[in-house]
Length: 144
Image: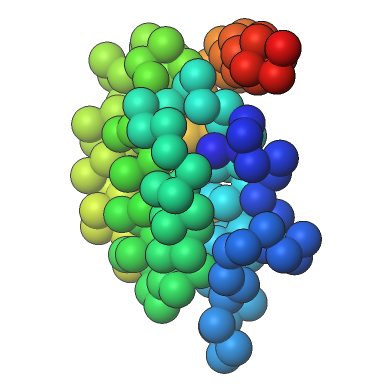
């Protein structure tokens, strides 16, 4: 979740581990892509609103050693998103099947497909943008 953290790019030294040495390139790219997805979500779009949880998740993502682990992390992220930022037709039509595939992912290519499908079909990016506005308003109110 990116709203209070100012982004979580591990290269920026934001307190999050990088992929372990020896991690395959494709696995590293998948890890980064999932973290990038998380960083595009404001706190107003998720159920869990504690930085420590999201930083912990990023550490778990970067400690993953196989596609199945990343699939579980993707599913956790989706399960912790507010329904208001998910496409209604995706929730009723594809979410259950998609979640099953997350749990069964054995290859990194499957992880990339799951992420792409979710970003393209599952997320209501207009609603996410509206949630960013809510987060910004709360942050400004907290600073006033």
